[in-house]
Image 1 (cartoon, rainbow, N blue to C red):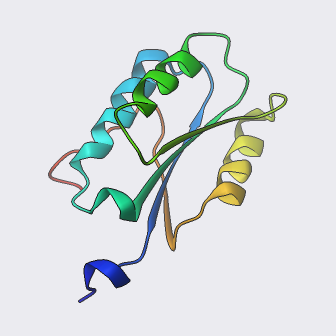
Image 2 (image 1 turned 45 degrees about the vertical axis):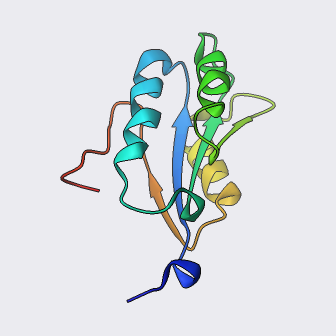
Image 3 (image 1 turned 180 degrees about the horizontal axis):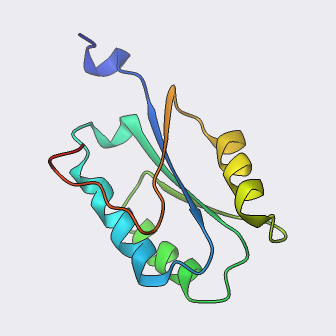
Length: 108
């Protein structure tokens, strides 16, 4: 069993393009993860969304200290954005959370 100080860090990677309110729900569902906040990074990689996704993440950054937004300089396509997510991951373990998904208390 890991002690809190030696616990591995988890990266939750959220590739996004025009996720809007679904993105917001996905990010908020990360609160269901049963780990200390400093052991989880939530990283949104935005692929040049045309909706209000960036504004949504900027608002949520005030409530989630471990939430980071990065915007690709150009739309990299779906798989290109997934690869960029992996490149940016800082965790010992990585999971993708897509905007249509949510983390529940039962599956955290």
